[in-house]
Image (cartoon, rainbow, N blue to C red):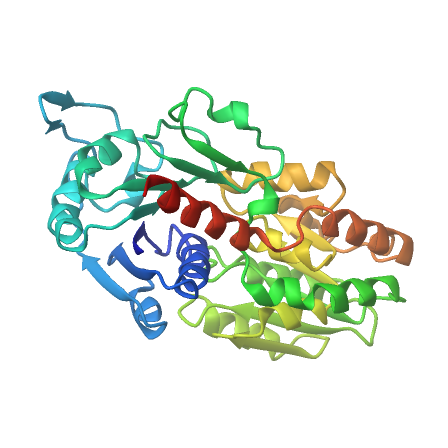
Length: 376
């Protein structure tokens, strides 16, 4: 089975789309699939990392068109449309992206094309429909039309009806955090982590993780907030950042003068263990939210982008996370004494653990394999 992923990372996009595609690619590879990637070389791209993982990457240059959308022709049908909300993330028009992808897909002839990109929609999909057998779309927004065979939206609170007018009637819809694309180590560390929560007696280890890029230096703001109103004397802090995060050196300088022992780590491979060994996480409402839920880790959650707002609100509604806004950083009320009391921490942990068991990637792989098997 041949699989091609079309996804990107950048300073603005972040790393989450590529990381969850890598998780899916690794699981598919274990079933004998040959996976390749098509990625545009934005600043902050992850092409080198994907290649180090052993996958071929077809790198596309940024074009920066004057008009983000331009029309193109699919057969006899002219495809014209306004730009999507996230069109600027593509670094080209959809027509230009189609033109770049056609020779690549013609050579590969994939069984599945997997797209994880907010800047691509039905126009791109129809234009390339002759060059792959089936299409899977990974979406979080339910804000645009797709011409896919399989749709994955792993967000809590999302319903299949949200896509009723956005995908074909025949499309299989995998909806909710039970399909979250988590690496296997998260489900493996789940029993240990949940047992730790049951034995919680106070905040000792705080983990801070704002994603692989954190272009606005929220990590630095969080550290400064904690320094202004220190926690208990025996609290230690671990900060996780991406190796290419633009504020890494600044955060390291802040860590050196924190009133608590503070370690900054980057490029790690043991995130599940770090989370499992923490008592509380301050983190973004992005893809790592599902990792924390799998492990039942209580979270102070910050919304760093508009597309994270729904995740944050949904997890807050079921009391699986404590959602705060920017004013909490300004006021220093990020972590209150009431929040870290055992009854609140244990309750948040139990609510988070009920959201997902961490086995979503297995369920998604089964659907992809079944889709090819059924076709044959």
